[in-house]
Structures are given as structure tokens and as C-alpha cells.
Image (tube, rainbow, N blue to C red; front, top):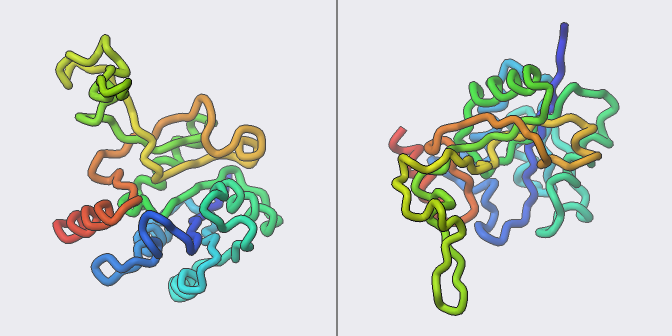
Length: 223
């Protein structure tokens, strides 16, 4: 029985944390191209589109032979949710898909194998899928609030436990989201009862700062 997945790469022009980050060159390759290359190697994707308002990204997409959905100004601002871009893409496509795969270019180290495994999990679980990584020393047990100059543990019952004795807690790493159109319009991309697709910490970098870009470049060079 055939099954279909629409892949969407959202890549708006604006970015406050890292100017032009989606097209920044890392080892002479635009950041978005790492995501494009992984998606193109997927065996499970039915169709792939890029949603953007950036003429440079459109040029990159054309060079890579990727379909472009030109995002209107009304949904391209700093405060506009990525859900708006996904809904805009669906409005331009008159074909229904079993699932929608969101691949943010700021998570460039997810592989085609990750994509295909997550899609398989989506069909097995019959539920939306979200990629995560295990919290290690950044565990919430190590986190505090500052109340009038005094640190107060967010989880006092866990604050003195050794790392290896802490319960497993997972961080949403932003690399992969898979959902249906019904999920999107009823609850949004992120909602209750998501099925986790676990990735290792090395593949879970999410670029929001110049430091993240430098770390990513180091990882690429070392690979």
C-alpha cells in the first residue's frame, strides 16, 4: 500500500540571533543545503518544498532542483509561527498527504536515515512524531530560579542526585516533526501525546547563535 509524505523546509529571510543564518556558508556550503541534501537522500519522502521569502534561498533551491513556495510578507516576520508557513504550503498544494514532515534548516545534522526512521515510526505509531535527545548534564535537576538573589532548585528532590541516578528526560531538538493536516489545524505542530524519535546529542545541534554556528563548523571539520 502506497503512503505519502510531504516534506517542508521553512527558511525565511529574517533572523535576529544570526543574520542570514539559513544561507551562511559552513565549509563553503549554505546552512540550508545540509538539510536539503539529507532530505533528497530520503527514500520515504514523496515531495519536498522550501517555504521562503528570501531570493538567495530561492536561488539555492533552484540550483538543487527543489520546489519553492514563495512566502508572503504577512507570514514572514519575527513573530510569525512556522505553522503559518506550513498552512500556506498546504493551501498551494491540491494533493493530500498521509503526513507532513517539517525539517528546520537550523538543525543541520539530522541524516537521511533519521528522516526515514522517523517516518517509519510515524506510520507504526499512527501518531505525530517529534525528534528529541537525552538530557545529560543539562538535566533540569541542575536548574534553578533566582528568587531575590537566592538560588532555588526547580526540582529539589533531584538536585543532589548523581547524573547516572537521574530519571531520563528528553529535550525537543527541533530536527524532525511529523504530523497530519488534522493535527496541524486542531492542535498545532507540537501537541500532547507525541511519539519521540531519539537522536544522539552530537546530531542534535540547533543553531540559534554565532556560537552554535562555530560549534557546527567544528563538528563538520572533525567529521
